[in-house]
Image: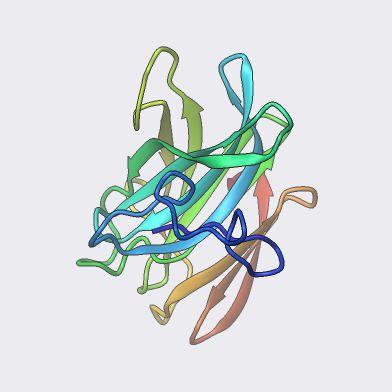
Length: 189
């Protein structure tokens, strides 16, 4: 699941026990790598989105950060689940790594990887009128229906980070090192 802590490492709302309404947790889920996209347009509102790689359901889980009127954190709301699609490693090896970035103040992109050196990219889209886990959908960008093969040796890719200002993504292959790709219009090129 996803547990929320304060920056000093203490539990959110210090002194309280773990609370389902603050954290997000589902028994048996393999949640891996979490990232944040601030400023996603959810209709007329601006949302902060948290994404997590869900290896159990081979999906990207998306959560809206809910805050009170003062802007203080309340809880996470599950607003999307995007299947990673075809071409990734079998079993629970995908999605493995994950990174998010907001481009041009409106396009939130998710990059997801597997343990065989592949990466695909998804553009998040607000689904007008939808509720629950259908509020955000995703459009996948890839290499003709398959994820891009980043690692020639098929090394595990877990660590990824996007510098949206410089329009660059850094992708770490555990067997080869760090790859740097220029992004064009927010897309892996």
